[in-house]
Each structure stands twice: as C-alpha cells, then as structure tokens.
Amino acid sequence: MRIWRSLDDVAEDLGRTVVTIGNFDGVHLGHQHVIARARAVAAELAVRDVVAVTFDPHPIAVLRPEHAPPTLTTIATRVELLERAGVDVVLVLPFTREVADWSPERFIEEIIVDGLHAKAVVVGANFRFGNRAAGDVSTLREAGAAADFVTVGIPLDGGPQVWSSTYVRHCLVAGDVAGAAEALGHPFTVRGVVVEGDKRGRQLGYPTANVPTREMQAVPADGVYAGWLRRLDADAGPDEPMPAAISVGSNPTFAGVRERRVESYVLDRDDLDLYGVPVEVSFVARLRGMEKFDSVEELVATMREDATRAHAALGVPEPP
Image 1 (tube, rainbow, N blue to C red):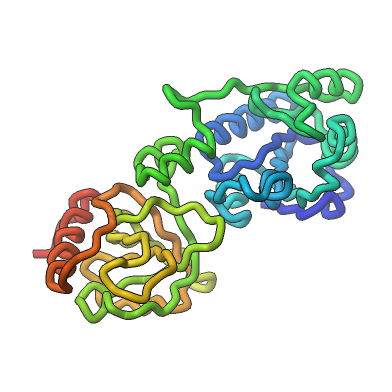
Image 2: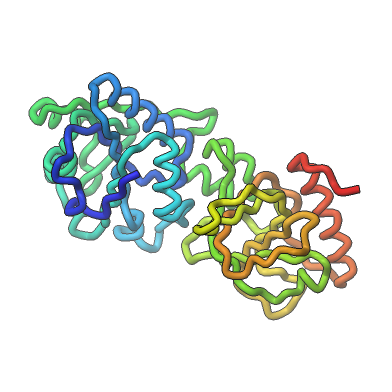
C-alpha cells in the first residue's frame, strides 16, 4: 500500500488511475461497495491503480469545528481498511481553509486530472465537493467529457437505513455495537496503547487493559460489552484476538475517576502484562449499561456475571 500525504508525494511516473473520493470514515459497507465498483472499472479500463482520496482533518472540523463529528477511525486505521477493501494508493489530502475555497473546477484540475491522471472517477451518488459543495456527479461528468475521464456515481445502499458514517455514530451513541458492525461489515474497534490505571480490577480479580479515549474519538455509549482484544506489537506481529468483557465509561462506583476509558478484561486471564502495548479492542455485543454499585461486593458479583455473559455472547466456553 502506498500512502501520499500531499500532491507533492505523488509518483512522477504515475500512469492513468481510477479515483474514488470521500472521507471514508469507518470504511463502512457503502464505502466498500464504491471501492468494489472502482476496482471493477479499473479492470474494465485496464488501469492498474485505484486511488482513494481522503481528507485530514474531517472537512467539518475546519469549516464548522463546533459541529465536527467524532471520528470512527484514525487515518492509519482508515488506510488499513481502505487497503483491505481493494485500494492500491491513498492520497491523504490536508484539508485547509484554502482547499475549502477551491472551486469544483480547480479541484478537478489539480487533484483529479493533473495530480492523479484519472481515467475514471467512482463516487457515491451524493458526493459533493468544492467551495460551498457546489460540485456534484454531474459536474464531474461534464468535466470528464473534456478531460478524458469517465464518472460513475454509485447509488446509496443499505436498508432500511442507508449506510453512512453518521448512522454508525448514531448506533454507537445508543450502545448498539451490533448495528454499527452490520453497517461497517466488521466490528467497531478502538485502538490505543495500554496505560496504567487505578489497578482496582487486578485487586478485585479482574485485571483490565486500560485504553484512554482520544478527544473527538467515537466510542460506544457507557456500559459493558463483549468483544475481543488483540495485541498490535510491531515486532511480534498482531496476535490472535482474545475474548474480553469491555467496560466503557468513568467507573462511577469509585470516586475520583473522571475521564472515560475503554477497559478490557481478557476472560479467564490474570497473567497478561500489557502496559505500553498497542492493542485493538473490538465490540461485539452490549451486555448492560453502566451502573453505580453500593458496595464492592455487589460490583464483583456483577463483574462475574458480565464475564459469564461475555463467554456466551462470544461463543467461548467457560473453563470447567
């Protein structure tokens, strides 16, 4: 996979390409269908490279920062998902006020024609671009007639709810990680480096790997979930996922905790040392909402029940 961080990084010997453009946050099934069509168009036109153009930061974070949505993926995760979907090259276009002011014609000329030598552009039917979102699929078609590229607009799909990054965020706000996974085509994940927490879980017999949440990072609603934890150590390579009960929230039973955390207890394991280890946490099913308990004993009893329910939700037998 090649990653270009600006037009200056584009290979000088780049041939004709098939270009697809979007935020691609989450790379949900709608995005995947667009990329699959781009892949098919590339085969039809005997073009080697499918190039995905995405933006960093999210355009709304520049244009209306107070309305900027929490992101489903970091750029690194987005690139990985785009590669998995069939993209050959990702151009991460820095989005600035200047770029926001570009006319649709300038965007087409600088990015699509001169920059990426497009022979075809494949986008969702609702794709808009350029200053005040003045450009659309018809704008691309008209420009392509003069600049020697074809445009394919893909109808929005999914149902009864159209797949979109906004829909996935709404699912997460409701704690509906199963619905998010259905739209994404894979479980929603959070990545981060495990940090030392209060170590209360270890004292209670349920040691957890704590991953702080980033500002403007989408996470499921506070509660307890069943899912998987996977190590992402660069040297050893990604490990097999381990079944986990996952708590999201600020642990209201204990005073003093304010920041939201993603805390994963790997089922039936108390021998793991994950401090400083990059991990991926995948959410499969919601077990319950976040609760404040009157006693530690009540909390521990509920954690024991959570572990049992997580075993069942993940299809992992409990040890004898």
